[in-house]
Every structure is written in structure tokens, then in C-alpha cells.
Length: 267
Ligand SMILES: NC(=O)c1ccc[n+]([C@@H]2O[C@H](COP(=O)([O-])OP(=O)(O)OC[C@H]3O[C@@H](n4cnc5c(N)ncnc54)[C@H](OP(=O)(O)O)[C@@H]3O)[C@@H](O)[C@H]2O)c1
Image (tube, rainbow, N blue to C red):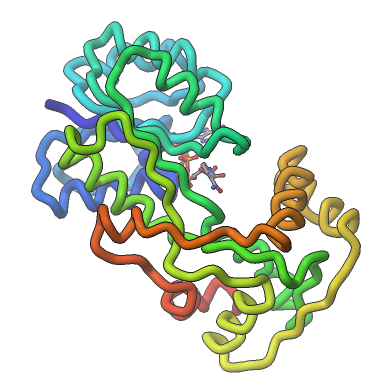
């Protein structure tokens, strides 16, 4: 009954491993390119491999019953074929709804013939760390849409939801879980909370759409345009809060809580 956690040294994968161990699971296998420096906890079986290196997967998949599928679209088809042939029954994929950049992963998972549960988070709270450099250098954030609004979720909460789905799997088969945080907040409201956590005033400066795309492209590539388009569309269509996360895990981190826990990222 092994659970394979892919991307196990990534943010969500690593926290998922911790949640599964805390729940008493002794059948967790973690996939990493670098077992020697992965620093995974005792009690986890480590498998060398990566979703992007398909030929590394057959050994890692032996005896696997369920898989947490980290988002890696380019090899999704052969990865799923190997998983199905290895006898995997249930795939929990981190992706997004039909209009989302990550949705092709969920489409492929649904076609794979295995049971599936989609985790479809919105904006991550951690995405606000893209402001860290500007805040540290100038106490100011420059973006085009101060009233863009979404309901960001903490990665920790996504990991908790993934663990709950893997542990109580059958009630989640065939379900796509929209995962949001507990409040819809504008960009200026997010910045206010970071300001409160830091204990000093921060300002929001409205700049052109193109300026922000140019700033983000070195780190995001083509996704920078998609990201800024998403911000723009959320001005008139703020992302609503969805209660699924609380239904699954019983709790949802607020952005204020997240900012207080992660305030050092902005110092
Ligand atoms: N709504 C949203 O914003 C949304 C929705 C769905 C997905 N996502 C995406 O979900 C991801 C979650 O990130 P995460 O931090 O939990 O990590 P992840 O992408 O799930 O896993 C990262 C791990 O995979 C391995 N890896 C090796 N080469 C890689 C490569 N070329 N690309 C990616 N991973 C590689 C690395 O581990 P080893 O070196 O140990 O092998 C790394 O620690 C983000 O990329 C995010 O953009 C976002």
C-alpha cells in the first residue's frame, strides 16, 4: 500500500511527507533526484528519480498504490502510463481548473484509467514573496492592479489537503477540489498585512502592466504574461472563497497568520 510522493523535496511534497508521517503512515516513499542531500525524515523510503526522467520511474513505482503527482506537464503522458502499468490505483494531482495553465495535467490524469482526485489551488500565499526584494529595497511594491483580488492559500494547507485525500482516499475519488484560503483580499490588503507583520509602513505604487511583465519574465518566463493577465481579470472577477479546504482539513491559514510566520522573508 505504498504512497509515492513525487517532488518530495519541493515545498508541498516535503510538507506532505511530514503530514503523512504525522498521521502514522509507515508506507511513504519519497522521489528525489538527490537522495544524498534530500534531508528527508527517518521513516520515509527514498527513491531516486524525477518525473522529468521517465526512465528513472519504473523502480520507484514498484508496489505503489497511490501517487501524489507534483506538477510537471511535459512528461505527464508517459508518467501516467508507467504508473497505470505498475498497478497504481489512485492519482492525486496538483493542477488547476479548465482555464488554468496547469489543467492539461488533470485532463491527462482523467484519461489515464486510474482513480483520481484533483487538487486545484488558486494563488499561493507564497507568491507574495515575489515582492520581497522590492519591500526590502524600497518599502514599496510596484504592480499594475491594486484592486486585483484573490483568495490565496498557504502551501502548508495544500499539503494538508493532499495528505487527507491520500489517507481517506475513497471518499475523494473522482473529485476536483478547488482550494482557496479563507479570505478574498486585494493586492493592497495583502500588502497591509505584510506591513503589519513587519511593523512598518509599506506603499503600493501603480505601474504599467508591461513593466510588471518585464520584471517577472526573468523568473517566470512566458508564464509572466499569464500571471499578469490573471491579476487583471481578478479586478472585476475577484476569486471567491471556497470552503472545500476547511471541509477536508478542518482549518485554513489566514494571510495575516502566514505573513507573521514568514515575516523574515520580507526582512
Ligand atoms: N495555483 C497555482 O499557483 C499552482 C497550481 C498548480 C501548480 N502550481 C505549481 O506547483 C508547484 C509547487 O511547487 P513545489 O515547491 O511544491 O515543488 P514541485 O514543483 O512540486 O517539486 C519540486 C521538486 O522537484 C524536483 N525537480 C527537479 N528538477 C525539477 C524541475 N526541472 N522542475 C521542477 N521540479 C524539479 C526537485 O526535487 P529533487 O531535486 O529532490 O529531485 C524539486 O525540489 C510550483 O511550481 C507552482 O508553480 C501552482
